[in-house]
Length: 218
Ligand code: C5P
Image (cartoon, rainbow, N blue to C red; front, side, top):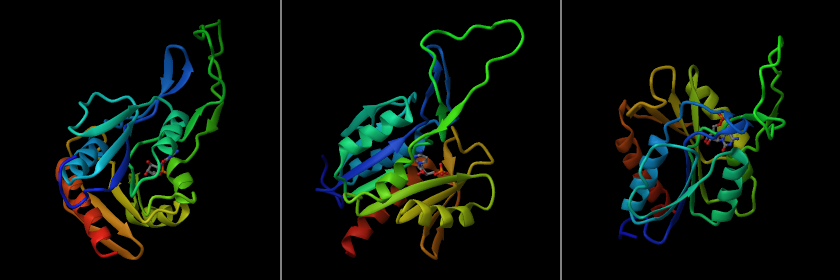
């Protein structure tokens, strides 16, 4: 690792979408590119942290000095996150699928005559909320809230509900998911810091600076 303000700290980041299999050839996913999570992992490593990046399927190179764990499903991501503990900072950036097919077919589903098959869904584990209530909860736990409206209000609710310290709220009604820029609000209790739109790398750098500040004022 490099030397920097986060030297000696372990930063655990989740990124990307998850893929929830319907059958051997089909899955449910979302438009997350992984760019924001990868940028945060890269910035944390540059700040001297040991970084574990647990990522769903994305087309991105592993940032220098980052330990990458590739997973597909939410359940695999939850397991990989638990195995990576303890961490000083948990940054849950992944767009984890809320639901997965209740049953994954072992053989490819066939078009049979008239009715298309009904897809039964079941809820995935909430990785952020689970971390938020564990005894080995990272002392600084950060979630993301991608919403298309009322982003700060939903972020405040999410912060309480999931036991996070900060929620980074962003409006995904434009082309944020998959795009290169992001405009975020850092929601910490009643205190909200709104940053203008900027490249995801720059958002990452500013957030990582604030992680370091959070430890230096302990
Ligand atoms: O509830 P919602 O999906 O909007 O919450 C988003 C935040 O929760 C993100 O930080 C995301 O990584 C995390 N999350 C999670 N596991 C889930 C769903 C969301 O860690 N199953």
